[in-house]
Image (cartoon, rainbow over all chains, first blue to last red; front, side, top):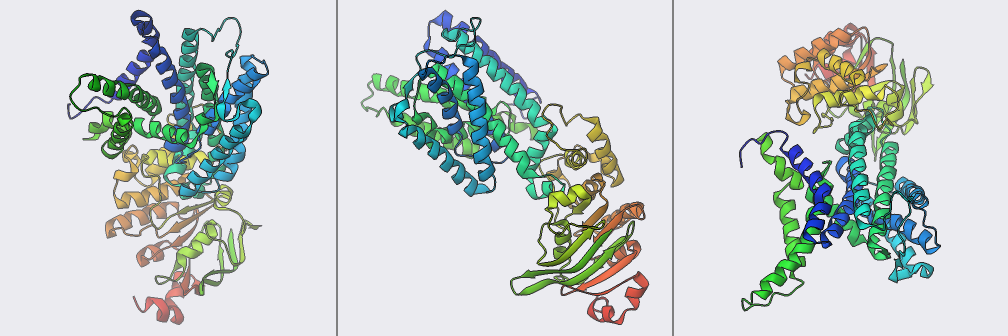
Amino acid sequence: MKNYLPRSTSGIFYTGVVLVFALIPVFVSLSGQIFYLDIFSRIMVLGIAAMSLNLLIGYGGMISLGHAAFLGIGAYCVGIPVYYEIYNGWVHLVLAIVVCGIFALVTGAISLRTKGVYFIMITLAFAQMVYFTFVSLEEYGGDDGLVIELRSEFGTWLDLEDNMVLYYTIFGVLLVSLFVVNRLVQARFGRVILGSKYNERRMQSLGFDTYRYRLVCYVISGILCGIAGLFLGNFTSFISPEMMDWTRSGELIFMVILGGTGVLFGPIIGAGVFILLEVWLPQIITFINKLELGVELPHELWHLILGAILIAVVLFGRGGIHGLLTRRKRG
Amino acid sequence: MLEIVNLEKWFGGIKAVDNVNLRVNENEIHAIIGPNGAGKTTLISQVAGELKADSGQIRFRNEDITSLRPAQRARKGLARSFQITSVMLPMTLLENVSIAVQNRKGHSFRFWKSALDDNELIDEAIQALRMVGLDDRAHRIANEVSHGEHRQLEIAMAIAMEPELLLLDEPTAGMGPEESTDLIKILQRVKGQKTILLIEHDMDAVFSLADQISVLVYGRIIATGTKEEIRANPEVQQAYLGEG
């Protein structure tokens, strides 16, 4: 690799990433690997969720360990209406926005009174409360979850039952999210959020009521994650409290760090790498075992390898994958 | 402009600020001098609102601000600089100052228009940077500039807020003599136009800038007056000037 990469290397790379997402359905229909349509839908949905978390962690310095709660709430905002045979997608969307917004407002108002480790613990606690609430709701399947019989209906022009249409709808939401988050962090609001991450005391002495700005940021992030949840529900067609378990929140954090915190495309890259490793590592182990080299690798070994890769990225690639891409620029 | 009445602050059993009374008049520079540990920074932190007053009152433009939070006081027109540089290190000098400008342009719940090429912010930020002589380095990252430049940035940020009252906590702290002289020149340019409460160790700075001087020793103000009065005061000489 050259010592000085052109400034726009990461820009070219990320444009390429968007193109890959746009062309996956073409690849799928040519190769017949329908499986990958599913994988990339999931990458985009979790990418949007991780992007919303990046608003908190990367731009705001607020490390939330309860973000999967919003993902789950968003999904149940599809699941529960569908259970009552309300299929209108706009109803689902408004519900997801309102419920996630209110939940973020209430829990954020309390959580943001704390800092650091306490903030992590309190967001975790709120998320676990939601988790156990849904576990105990027997009407909606409790632990076993709900099957979403029919996907959200946004009108005849947008038939989400068609996987291809669903894919491109999620792709559209992803592009809009990228655009909106990009505006947000460059606007005055984003400057205050970023400034509060770097030096909250100074921001206060400059006259900014940092608590209020952070709370609004928390609500925006919660709503965006809720929208991701709505599409997660639609595309998995099965939802359960398990999707808002704290380990899910941990995975979201990992996606953010893996891709690069405070970087617009970071979470998408993080989600992509994370999920593709999850898919490919078991396949690789199966492949090695088929070679019959005399040792039978335990199938679950892939978890260990995934963990090792993640640790390596955090240790050696400060700034995540984005950091690796741009590292040499400052030489 | 600023009136401090019977202000006190306790840290455990130690009285850091002991029954302080102080008046700062409009457009004058009021300097507070005193030996290390006299409670100067504690006092300025109380005026800025970061430390609560245990008793007493702080009045700003005839309004009691004793119970207001720092951000509220800043919006009323109080700006402070920090003795230990406190800026947003990963941001450029320009970004740091334009955030300071941003605050007086109304609330920042503006989510769409980019702040990075907003001339309303940039122009005034550049102006403040020019005042302290940093405009040619506007795009440097704050983390990568020298200590002296950090001190200048502190002043630029405070000036950019266009405050009614500027609280400067040892602006020349850790500076070499040359840098110090430059900074004094900058402050002389705003002298007479701005009300400043200045804490300073550097006696050259104090005597060339201040209209009024108060001497703080062990949390108590032992004398207030013009520089001639302070120089002539036997108590001050004994407690402070004589030692130096």
